[in-house]
Image 1 (tube, rainbow, N blue to C red):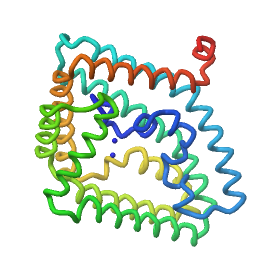
Image 2: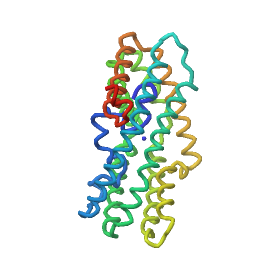
Image 3: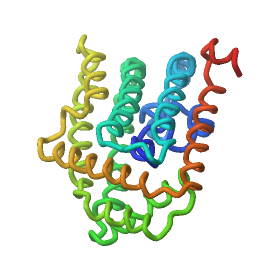
Image 4: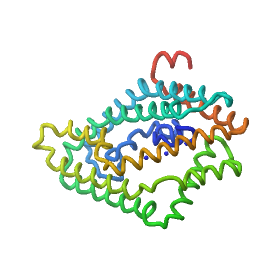
Length: 288
């Protein structure tokens, strides 16, 4: 769960590092697609390559034009510094990007289920062993350090991300980032606990996959609607942090200098144009 003015915190991997870097590697969006998690045999690799080719075609035909459209809508709302900001407007853009992410998960999940049906018990053990190692790495980085260190690390990460979108921050903007970071509820422990709960349920589901006619539907539900596994307390913290973050983005938008705003709008349009160029939509290809 990765950007300035809504995009910077949407955790949409296709956008976070730029489409030319991420788009050719759509397989990284699902852990099973990553070779570091599990060793695939030749038949599984062939199956994965065919499915991935189909998903890339679907993604560039149907999703990339929507990414470009949504980015430009955001850019229009940010273009006029005198136009009043409001939380509802910013939240709308946030929701639009999250819908695109959810659609992508829904599209890819059946392929994950199909490939898992072919996995051996040793491969399943390898997969969850690697996921457990990733959990330990997360704990070491985001749970174990003292609160001051966690807060400073979060602040530095945000400043680095913002620098990509608006160039260098001035002192007042850096202070706003510090204030934002200090107001957030710590959720790393909750995140890790929730992730482990989902993984345990997935492991149980996968181990009984061959005798379960509802396996694919159950796995899709677990992947696409994983938020349903959150505790009430964890969800409340997420809602609170989202609200704090969106309000911070509104504040930061009002603090942008004219040069920073131009930089931001150019960055957004550049990304939208990249999505246009990568799109397989015939209508868009004709205009490129």
